[in-house]
Image (cartoon, rainbow, N blue to C red; front, side, top):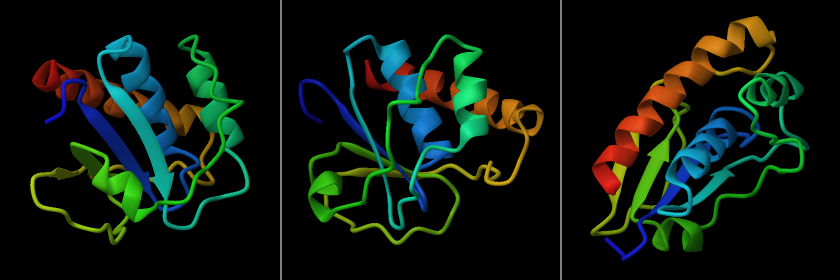
Length: 132
């Protein structure tokens, strides 16, 4: 693992779960971890209901945008976390791969997304305790 651990969150559209996870880890790590997110088929924008539930925590993800998953982003990461969406991710030796089984927030209301956000937050906090 590099001096500053690098974590990549991956889901299909990079518009919900992976964006929430990246924002939460970035917030909690306070610079101790380099954080990225990506998707195999990026959406046009972040899910508006995800923006809403993240704003409730004081985290503004409205200026973020979905990014395409690349082999380079996986190679540069120490930990790669797929978000339960069956993404095919390049596998490199020496990387830690985790798959977090999470409901997809697509098409859900803010009320339905809050439990997903809170589950991700708990997982991110646990991951952070393992990394630093």
